Every structure is written in C-alpha cells, then in structure tokens.
Image (cartoon, rainbow, N blue to C red):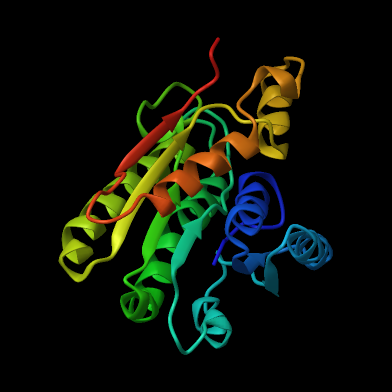
Length: 229
C-alpha cells in the first residue's frame, strides 16, 4: 500500500515496485483521475494495481481503507502523502498547523496502527517518507518540521515495538525533491524552479526499493537522499 500515490514520490515508488518486482500496488490518494492514470501506468510497467480515493486527513477516513487490504496480509506500507505549509511561527495559521499535523503525522500513525494485523501476517515492512526537515528544523518551516520530527519519533518507537515480530521499519529522508511540492516551495521563496537541480522522485523510489528488498536479518533503518549542491 502506498499513500500519496497519485503524484511525486508516491507515484515513483509505485512504478518502481511494479518495474522491479511486478508488485500489486494498493494506491491511496485524493485525486481519482490521477490515481486511475497511475494504475494504468503500473500495469504497463508489469505490476497490478487497485486504488482508493481517500482524504487521510479527514476524520473517519481510516476504516474506509480496511476493505482494500487482502485477507492474506500486507507486505509493505509506504507513507508518502504529505503537505508542506510554510511560514514563521508567528504567521502560520491554526488551519495550516492542524492540516500539517493531520496529514503528515496523525494519518501515518492511525493508518499504521490499523494495518499492523495485516503486516504481521506477512512479516511486512513499514516505510515512512520523511524529509530533511525531519532531521533539521529551519526558520519558516516550523509546522512542517514539527510533524516530520514527530514522524521520525513514530518510526523509532514503532521499530522498537514490532521488530521482535519480524516487522521492519524504515525512515527515508529526502532533501529537496523535484515534485509539485518543491515547485510550491520555490514559488513561496520567490525563486525559480528547475527540476533538474533537485533529487529526482525515481531516485528516492530506488532507495525505497533497496530498503524493502534488503534480506533479513538485516534492516535499513534510515536513508538520507540529498541534492549534491
């Protein structure tokens, strides 16, 4: 299962898993049209796919995921959905703060908790797409960095809880990545956006595949992927 699968890193991860492993992707996102296109592209890449249009930040969203989980269990859960509000502590609105917490931290927490029984059946893998902001907080990024620091704490605590059951937990920390989110960030900064200057989503996806396919008993706990300059 991949959240935020309709674009950016989530889309790239879905396609990489189809290309390398003919995986079946359960794609979650808010844009049904883009999800439909993703499913078509996954099938063309050698995988299979199903999709559900869900707003994971909404109250009551989590139970609607459960019917999409195979009764045999879940091999992997990749959290890629996210939102990036920017602004100083003084000027960040309560709505932006709440939105960041709900999608960037609350949703991964609740989705993971709900799907642990399915992950136990396959001794599966939970992988959190975090951010450089989850390691270093900078001015203007407080609402986003708070949630991403919390996401690292969630991953670390979860790993300590479930490793004895054979469930692996990994955090990926991409730096600035060539996605719609980065285009928004550059516009906010009043700077030009050149996708070639930033980490490519496909490269983050390769890091995800590496973590997921590293054979036991080894575990890739964290990967940092950054632009060279």
